[in-house]
Image: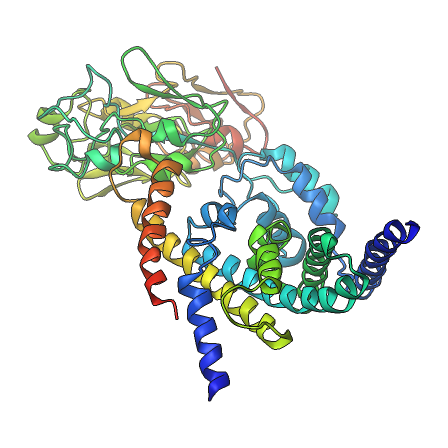
Amino acid sequence: MELFGQIMIMAVGAIFINNFVFAKILGICPYLGVSKKLDSALGMGLAVTFVMTMASAFTWLIQTYLLVPFGIEYLQTIAFILTIASLVQFVEMVIQKNAPALYKSLGVFLPLISTNCAVLGVAILNLTADNGLSYNFGFSILNGLFSGIGFTVALILMAGIREKLEYAELPDSMKGMPIALIIAGSMALAFLGFSGLKF
Amino acid sequence: MLETILIPIGVVGGLGLLYGLGLAIASKKFHVEIDARVEQVLSVLPGANCGACGKAGCAGYAEAIVSGGSAINLCAPGGANAVALIAGIMGQTATVGERKVAYYHCASGGTNTTKFKYEYQGISTCKAAVNVSQGPNLCTYGCVGLNDCFVACKFDAITIDENNQRIIDEDKCTACGACVKACPRHLIELIPVSKIVRIKCSSHDFGAVPKQVCGAGHPCIGCGICAKNCPVDAITMVDQLAVIDYTKCINCGICATKCPTKAIEDALAGMRKKAEIIEEKCIGCTICAKNCPAGAITGNLKEVHHIDKDKCVGCEICVKKCPKDAIVMK
């Protein structure tokens, strides 16, 4: 039961309180770039969630069994980037072979994820956990999963608003990116309210 | 000392090597055969992604041709040239449909060819304007004049003259249909380029109403005279509007001469030649007389026929039908 409680705390923490987009300001590029349509936002969100989960697992292994024993933690960033990029490539190949339909619907998003800073962010933050939870292997994977879900939630909320916004009458100067940035700011403010939930 | 350099090099280099090898093996194992013809077909398509073929874009159409067996002559912007190239790649024979061009079934829309009932000040698109009490112009079927079609055209085929009138350049028009979709009043139709008799009105009003509201002065009043006079029954009245069926139309232009409001455009008016029989060649088979839509040819079996030049409409049907090439246009 205690374990379940810990997992729930982690889920709420990763999805709402420490949401990657709103609280940590990571992964803003896909957040603004792929949030014009609900379908593509959902596709991108799921792809990121998948890669985040996988990356959490691999980077934890690398950190624990390679970087720490050799005392070269300062190489964390470069080793993780290498890992994530290769992982994304590998996942792309597997999906293309085994699930062509999924590959088509994800399209250009898959390669884009390799440069998504939120993925690197979750890998590094997993190993410098400062919210009172000791992150072992299992928790790292779960945190990656929940962070990905948080990212997906942010993307879908944004896409929903922007789809409605297409029909709104806006001054020319506010159309497109300006209004999207204002909305992003308002949503970040709203999500700030969740920080009161801190356990 | 050396260790602090060698260990990081070894670890990161080893990781890189490991990943590289892994990916190399994976790319062999998960290799997906991509049909090279898709790339080739895509390279000869114009890349306008206009959607005239019915697919999402040029890439989708290329894929549909190669794997889905889609027809190869659906690309309007590519035209005959693209069809021939695709046929070469796919090993098929090229069958080109007749080129079509966009045409406005409305002569109105310019500053002095439109009658307005109020001054529209709002979002500057036709789509928005037609929603405000049925549009700013008096004719509820006519051109609003806010240029949604001009914006939609990706090939600069629509120009606007000093009178704010839209003009379609038929040489540039690729019949992609973007303007057809953009026009909220559905004034634009794709018409075979060889058919030069066209109705320049879309009004379903009857009698005096279209005359009062049309700024261009040539509305279809729904009288049906053209339909009655058409020798091949190509014109039908649909809700008080004359509509030409271009599979039947023979370009004779009779309708244009009969129309009381001059609502039918005929680019060949007054320029048509008359048919003439070369008497030495005529064998009196009567085929021409049977096929003449205007009843201009008379003559008995096995006797030389005669063409009444006043009745001849210059449709050239007899020229095509004569088995002895005994009829010429003069």
